[in-house]
Image 1: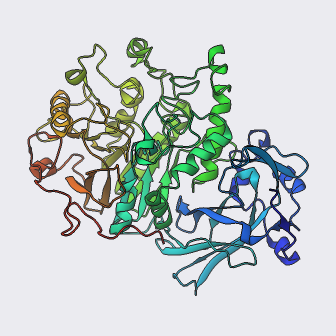
Image 2 (image 1 turned 120 degrees about the vertical axis):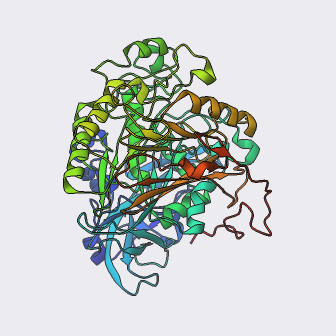
Image 3 (image 1 turned 90 degrees about the vertical axis):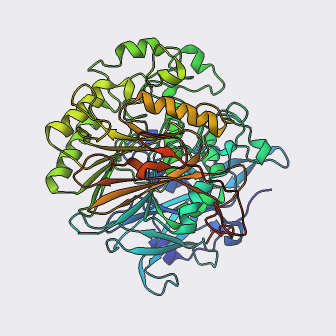
Length: 626
């Protein structure tokens, strides 16, 4: 059935609506339309005097905000005549083919634009609107809308909403927050840190718990927001009603759009996006497993790769993934001529400089692809190897030195992969004991980073890491380069907090028992001097509560993710005092709930899930999406 479109948009609205204001028409590269979208061609093909009937349109995936600045923030939504995603940006004669799953045939759907209003206010009732505008979206960008709200005040909470032009068809109301000015003195900020959300392995309850508690200001996501695998290769989602679509390994632009859209049906993820501004980066699975500059673990520039199920080159697959990511995530394109640049920084007053790296996609030298581990082991300390490429490295080091010179209290660094040494020989008995897909595979790059920090006396460094599906808390040290005392922490230059996964399984097995996991954790903790706490068993997240005096890290574990619930356990709490450059002793207060604590003990709570008295329960009421 062909969707009808009606000439409902007044000329005044046409005159004020803006194509380029929808930032997704300018991603991933403003001046290279062959890599993305030519706005000129889109405008020429779409007649703004025609528009969809508002009653046929739906806000299919809620709202989101991200990349906050002191005076602006990115706002996102999707308003579409269909819940399915667009299969291509190629259109013919003003129509786009859309697959009708009921009739199993393609039908022609009008490519008429959707006209969208947005407004931002300082109150929930929108009695004090501070910014507003009108933009277009269309099938070319999968009907997504991404705009920059401006004229905002620093470190202020705002509410925003989208609506179809000249109608009562409105999106849910979102909440967001700007950052302070770089020279503002602020006394506290709270962050929730996530990584590795795998849809078929469980519900994303971790995203919803800070919403239920209203405990943070911003959300940091360190990557693996989606996974590219087909169901059955990595998880059996049908057992809990969570089969990721399309149900195959993804390669095309449609595939990546559909996969992100499927993940964004999780109500806790929707609520987190709606309630908090996000600052995300990608890891490897936003494209493919163990990606690097020239390929990935299962797809390299070889003839067999091109003949694979996807039938696409490495570069084309990466461009499909990157474009879909920028369409769907509330993120700024920092440099429009650099379509792969996602590395960027944020100043949160004088308190924090947040530096977000890309240690996966941008310009990473060859990594461990499973079949070449011995080779990567041999070259792991080669000075020419880089996790991020020379351009990003130069920017990274300049960011650290500039932060110290300006007098920011803390430097918080978002890195997808674990920075500290991970000697896993005690657990694996491997001849190549290190994790060569992490910073261990790029020792020279790590040594250059540590050398900069030590040589320039840059302290108060907090490194955030994800990827490993486990929790690791370490003093940040240069082993072999500087003396270090594991009992006192003397000799460290900061702390690394590496978090477990939202739902991706334990690296030692999805069905591992708590006792088995804690035994492995003990082996790992004993094999690494700087590693102060390690936990393998729990899925979850952690929060950082930052003040000028200290950083408090609170790790939370989820008792179960096979059902949607608000339960969580406080696993461990850590403190870093300003100027100490190490974990406060006794580490974790000497007691944790799970894992293995150096110089401390594990005391497990004998509790059961009880919805009547709230044990392991954040909120007895199910999370309501606003």
